[in-house]
Image (cartoon, rainbow, N blue to C red; front, side):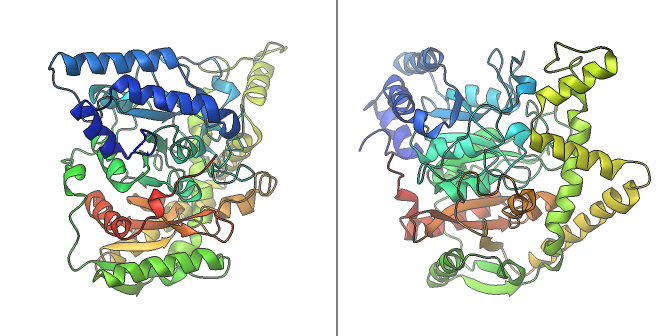
Length: 486
């Protein structure tokens, strides 16, 4: 088996046995990037020399007989929203074009402790605001399955990198579906953990009550291992929850007896592509054959998720992005006549159209006279959305749904229709509003050979159950083994 065709666990076994070295593995992925990324444009930054130096250090540790970490010698790509000490971090924005963080994010520290090889920074929608990676200030990432189509967003670069075998693992962030939707579009595994499971220290904020980091992998076991490495309490993040982290990688292959799967009637309504619905129904039949009980549940307030999200997230974004004024952080305009002009020109030049749109939406919702009518009301409905899930999880273990209403759409198709673009996240937003863990796994293909993803949601801090449920399906199918041919 080639290095590029191997799963994360297969790579680890081969590395431990000495069949290949960390330098061999890293070189294979760097060469894949060199050959194919001009087409896909998944990466904003690749430092070949630094990656190979990390790989040589891991090989030296092994040869000296020292203990190595759980990801020793395995390359990992990072979404460019995660701070890396001494390495440019742009968030896909001109505003941070020259920003070099003086510290590592918590997850980067964890990856280094695990002896992972950090292979590069991936493209994204600017400040994680978007569903297609078309909002990046630098380039448009393509879907490896069809280069005329989007990989999804905002973590499209990370999803495309794993899908195109340019990295076995990648990290993304998920504020309203930004890991799960691109995972579905690109035919890989992507997981959003429970809010608070992974520290947000060093994650450049979009909407602080919704943002969460998570893993991409080619299979569920790889996602389980990366989640295990990333998770854990961090006192530097006040929202980081101090709860034990299960050994996901050890339990992921254990089937669940008496599994109860809920299907929300609100998820199968007008607007859902027929091929997507057929793939999800077929996936549910697989679970039935495995002995799972599939039953209907109701999430009555999910119909308000898009409206609630696009009040809360832009409101938090308008606050978080106020610091980028050309003085405290970020790009400063060269030509201005006074201080107000300097602020206006700097933000006008530094931010793209979608970021400006959301800042204005948020500023309006928080303004005097509108706070109660919009923001406060949205918070109340958010609570009702969470209560719907709490009630549903009293009778089921997980909830299955599509991850998006359609397969990957064409680049440029929705970019001038913000509402249509926002609706592409209709099935993923509610998990962020409720703080739940969710995973997307490959579940089939459309007639145009585009991947279709199955989303599974669970109660807070039930990632172990979610991973085991996903792995049950994966063992019975081979969708995850399909690779895009560039």
